[in-house]
Amino acid sequence: MSDAALDVVEFLLTTSVYSDDRTLDENDLPPSFRQVFWTGGSGGSDAGSDDDDDGSGRRRAGITRPLSATNATTREATGVERPWEAVSDLMFTERDEFSGTITLTQRDLAEEWFLERVDDQRLLENPTLAKHFEDHEAYDGDATHEEARERNRPIQADRAWIDGLLEEYFDEEEDEDMLDLVEVRAPEEVDITLDDLVLTDDQENELDKIAKAIEHRDYLSQIGLREIGKLLFVGPPGTGKTSTAQALARDMDLPFVEVKLSMITSQYLGETAKNVDKTFEVAKRLSPCILFIDEFDFVAKTRRSDEHAALKRAVNTLLKSIDNISLIEDDVLLIGATNHPDQLDDAAWRRFDEIINFPKPDYNMRADILQVITRQMRIEEFDPQLIAEATEGLTGSDLRMVLREAVLEALTEDRTTLTQEDLLNAVEEFEERDNLKNMDMIEGDHDALVAGGDIGKASDGGHSHGHDHDHDHDHDHDHDHDH
Image (tube, rainbow, N blue to C red; front, side):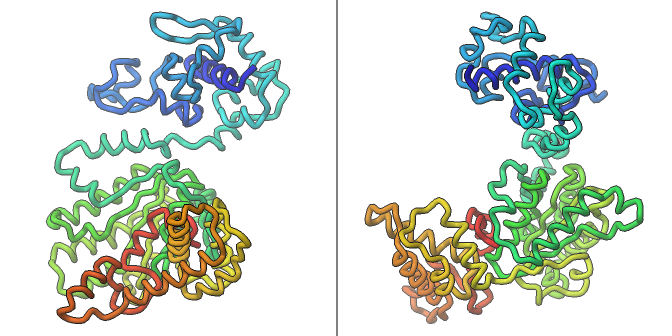
């Protein structure tokens, strides 16, 4: 019997059991199953019962029983291209030709058939069936509902759930401006994990501590330790600050809410203080989540400048909002990041209970980063130590750009296998471009200005191996190797 048949039967059993057992909720369905049946709020759905109404005539977002397994829903949930064909020869399945619904004619036979072909690991990926079979006379395994549910990604981390909440919360036209200040990513939309990063021992230790704090936040609340869970990531551009925050969200199945602090100076200046408040309210409603605030030095610069009064008011609102949000009480882990810690004042520093340093990688870390980012590449006689020696002062993002240059240069020669010489040439090319980027532009020299514009202006006028858009590297796929 094919894997496709097993996948389809699991889906049919799950929909049947979930429809009958009202003690189960959305967190008992595997993510790929529940996304098929999730419906947003408002009045869009005509299915469901009175329980789905929130009292205002609006349909509550959620999953409505009974669940119907059609060819379409089964295909979407399992990835099996022709679901009915996969199970049509089983004696306990039938299909309604008119509606396309696939059903189990004898669920007990389907259960026995399924149990003969699965192990504990498979059941632990499906809390609905783990609960159903936990005390089943034909099941002699050890999978429990509690463990399966603990392993299952919570509904609050699903894109559909996040979108439904945002749509419900931002239901007025004036609120739409607020969405320019934040970007919300579901964990599955983050393509990097902590295992993909090269971290220092100090970074790993601090992240382990915060993971334990999240796990035991009820205990911390009981003993009155509430001032915890506000981290500040400090280091040059391109050293993996954003990458680490995003990877933490992915690994812990938490929505990632990023505040675009630079948007504070946008055309919505008059509304900024209110929007800052609303940003933190969004984080609380999406909790548990990670709230990430980049360019935190902007706060200190604004406080001591002659900026517009509305802007200063917005920054003060931001600081108060930070004071009023808590990992222990609100389930929000706040992470600030700055490339310029020297520009932070005491008011900014004291908001954070942990400071994590993100230095430029040393020789050993550069070698490790090179190993990570070349995993999918073919390189003849690759010696990461040699390249690490030649790239002193470069960040993780810089190393990614070096490899990108080497790959593109090889492709111009129709080669997909690199050589050590390709890498060394790319290092030299990168350093030449980096030097040119930091050259003082000659006043009136049009060509020099054009060249500078193509390459990217120097940040703060000083030499740095990071770029003025290193902030973007920290966000982009360039970060998948940053330490």
